[in-house]
Image (tube, rainbow over all chains, first blue to last red; front, side, top):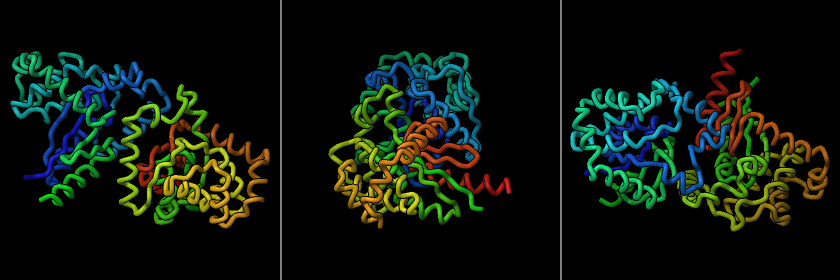
Amino acid sequence: MKPRIDFWYEFASTYSYLSAMRIEEDAARAGVDIEWRPFLLGPIFKAHGWTTSPFNLYPAKGRYMQRDIARIAESRGLSFKMPETFPANGLKAARLAIAAKAEGGTAAFTRAVYAAAFGRGLDVFDDAVLTDCLVSAGLDPDAMRERAADVETKTALRDNTDEAIARGIFGAPSFTTEDGELFWGDDRLDQALAWAVAHKASKS
Amino acid sequence: MKPRIDFWYEFASTYSYLSAMRIEEDAARAGVDIEWRPFLLGPIFKAHGWTTSPFNLYPAKGRYMQRDIARIAESRGLSFKMPETFPANGLKAARLAIAAKAEGGTAAFTRAVYAAAFGRGLDVFDDAVLTDCLVSAGLDPDAMRERAADVETKTALRDNTDEAIARGIFGAPSFTTEDGELFWGDDRLDQALAWAVAHKASKS
C-alpha cells in the first residue's frame, strides 16, 4: 500500500489555495495517496480570542500575505485575486466537499472552489458560485446540496474539525502523516510527502 | 557590484537561528551580499497587543514550532535545544551585534549567540554567556561592552527597529531586497536570494 498524507484545508485560507492546486500532482509524483480533509478554522481562531482572520487583525501580516502569495502564484502560473469578503464563510463549501466524497468529486470540487475564491476573487458562500463549482466538477448541484444538508455530512465536518484540533492543527493548510507528524503551510508540503515516503518505507 | 539583501533578525527568534547558521554560505553561493540587521520584535509584538511570543500565547503553535525546527535542524546537522527562558531578552545581544560591526564581527558574533541560545539552550541575556560569544567571535568583551553602551549603538538599534516597522516587517527572520521586496521566514531565504539576483540583473 502507498503511504498516505491527510490534507487539512479551510476554504477561506489563501495558502490552502496554493496547496490544493498542486497537491495531487506532487503526491502522485512522490507515490503518496491524499486524504482530503476540509475543516473549519473558525472554532480554532475563536479559541485564540480572534474574531476574524489574523491577516485582518494584523494588517502588516495581511499585506505581506497578499504579496507573498502573488509572487508564488505567478511562479506557478496561477492567477491570484483576493475576494472582497475576506475571510469567506467556508461552511457551505466544506459540507459540499464532504458530500462530494461518495461521487469521488471532493478533489475536483475543492479545486473549483479555490479557483473561484482566489483565482477570480469570488465569494464562495454565494450559492450561484457554488453551483458553478459543482457543475464544473461534474457533480449534480441538487443532489449534492441535499446530501450536504444531511446530519451525516454535518457531523463529518464537525468530526474533521475536532480531529484537527486533537492533532494540534492551528492553521491551514496542514498535512499529517500516518505516524502522526504535523506539517503546517504550503511551504511544508514537499517535506510532508518526503516524510510519509521515508517513514512508510522504514516500517515495511 | 553584487546584489544585496538585508537580513533582519531578533535574538529571541527560533527561526532566525536557522537562517543565521546558513545565510552566509547560501548568499555566497548565490553571489549576494548580506547586511546583518539585528532588531527588536518586542515593540512590534506590543503593538499587536501581545505581551510575549505568539509561541507562548498560542500553545499549539508553540509545540508545532519546536517540532518543526527540530526536524529542520536535524536535516541540516544543527543541534536544537529550547532555552528555559523563552523568549529571551535580546537587547544586550542586539546592541553587541551592532557594536561588533566596526570590527567586522557581527556575523560571527550573531552565529555564536544563536548557537548558545538554540543549539545549547542558554539564556543570551546572561553576561557570562555573552562574554563567551564575544570571545568565540574573536572580539574583546570589554571594548564591545563599552561600545554597546554608546548612544550611537543604542540609536542604531532603535533605527533598525523603526526601519523594520516602516518596511512592513512583523516577524523574524525577514529579508528585504534593494528594490523593496519583503520575504518572511527561513523558508523564504532561497526565494529572497533569487529575487535579489534576478532584479539586480534586470537593472544593470
